[in-house]
Image 1 (cartoon, rainbow over the protein chains, first blue to last red):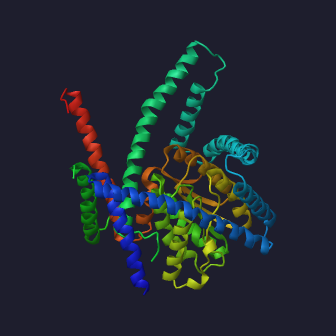
Image 2 (tube, chains in turn yellow, cyan):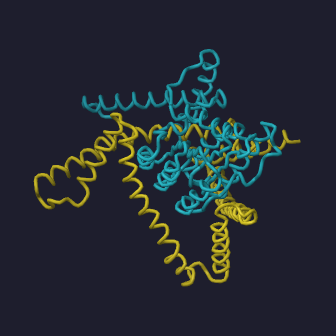
Image 3 (cartoon, rainbow over the protein chains, first blue to last red):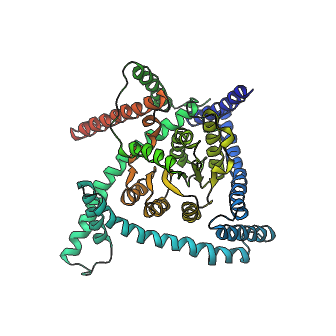
Length: 211
Length: 249
């Protein structure tokens, strides 16, 4: 019975995957309309799966509160704020001032602070990198980062000074020639890897939907 | 019927033919891949974590299933199918976190299948696959609590990340955990290189399946990547040479 079920999932995944893929290569109204319909369904299913994900999030934190695990208070705050946001969102519309206040004065500042924290973390990580990995590639990495920072940041001798112009030109040369070439090479590898990851799913070698 | 993109279909066919050819060649003459220290150290770190009764955290990133950023997470799921059985008998089995509802479901199904194969279905809990937060930074905000309360000592990030990936990796690195991180985004790769000890550069994020020898086709697909890349490099060089010589293409 389980064997049959696995075949059904695989057939549905492969069939719909092939139709969506062919829709990009074959200019046929039937295939294109099928591709668009499948993609609309996928968007709907993804939206529905968000509810499953949120249920999962609540369940994990509910269990944590129930078992009084370390940090259960954070979980309790999460459940409380989740329910308050949900109720307010259902009572008012998403563009209501009450919801906008929650977004502007709670979520936005917290996410911006995390972004600010990232800048500090990266600075510290840069120093740690030099002490952790004392090889040529790390030195080149940190050296290049410093040069680009000097060339793009506010310079002490601002204006048309020779040093300023020199660093500006050096930064442009590094970012437009060396960094672009390297990034394109990496992107090429990533694109090939992505194509083959997709093909493996289409060929039922990888079965993320389970057996 | 208006038209067929023969070039596109041809490229797709080329990938399929090369995949079959390399699968056949691999059976007769298996190839030795270059060493990626991050993958080699990961297995040892997982074994140590299982022995010490510590947990492995596997992050599939903040990308969605339906977006173009799903590919590295699919590669991550393939790696997970290898890692999950290694920890299934532990008191603290692997916990998988995502930033997308559908990806959470895929993680749960991959875990369930891995537990079934390891004949440890009884140990499986759906909460081993978790949505940590639906937005990139809410996802990262959930990481410290997870690391503090779940006794995590191995932290694997293989999926789609933006800049938030570096913050997630940095939090784990500061807790002296073993951290392996890889993503498809070029800028984030640079940030991860600076942040963690074991970062995956470029297409290495897609190589986990081949290095863990999940199936012959995973090994073959890595060789296809190399072969097609060589073809593209040759085409670029020939094109550059012809343009330099004044030949219009």
